[in-house]
Length: 445
Image (cartoon, rainbow, N blue to C red; front, side):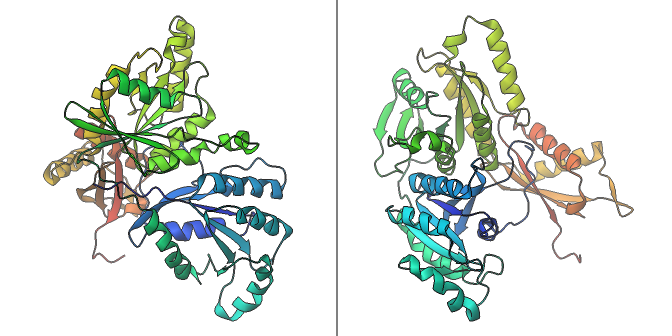
């Protein structure tokens, strides 16, 4: 079993140069999954993408941090973030507007990195205007410029085909024993991720083997306990000291995204003393956007063990933050004292089993028929919506196709109802469950 590619491609550039358009073209939105966790995350600025069967994480850094007062400051921070965290950088400029002082400053910054940078001139719609619109940008003195129309697709295939060798080089060919449970420890800096990994290894008397060659952003440890094998992915990362550190702390989210690309179960640690923060809820939201199984560990519980009021308040805060993800187990733990660590592995085992579980089609169709009989679907254009059959499309997370007479007409509340019926009927109480509503093929629209 090989580990998934965790290459991170970051899009940077001034506002309105077309980052979102390129992002959407790369992501190629297909059938929308019905995600049963609304309200968890805001706009999506990142996605798992695959080009010629090489997967990678794509991030539009412009969407992550919109607090800066000047455009130049804002884009400088994007560039610093990309240089620090990304593996490959797409820097977009506006071919219609021409070269700007801000572009020149960022190119100077990007020149100093050893990362692969693609200098892209967007809004060039055809070969006829390519030479004229590109010419001002050659004064940047970069080796190669990529002409592109994110809107119309001109130059897109050329760009992506050039990206492919970079992805092939970074594919992680690390063999893991079959059925290894891949677990990522996520959370803000200093919440105790590394301590928790060390406590688990020490307390559970695990057989440990270090893995070389994994990404520089995370430390991976392969451990075995009883007959099971676990890959523990610690995203604490080693950060260079410097002026950019404070500013970049909030971007520890990118480390989380890379780890999510490689794990089955995300363990999000929350600091019991500090309580749950907006950064925590963002990371929790990202786990669901990526369809990962989720467990929440309230770490440093020993610090509030004698304060009943504080405990109640904290548990209420956590409940509020995960009200759309009621299936995620919440455990009270302490990396320092070892409290709660023993409960971790039985829980991980249950979550992992559900995450990878398969179900017979006949049982799924009975479940669908019962759900529709119990609560009839609404009418659409004078006819009651029909549901024909269902089948499991995949696992990790469990994904089911539901074939219907008019999938686009199914109200969100009925989609939620069916998702909950599947969750309850199949005993999937600890993992995300996704339904994909499809039209019967061969029918005329």
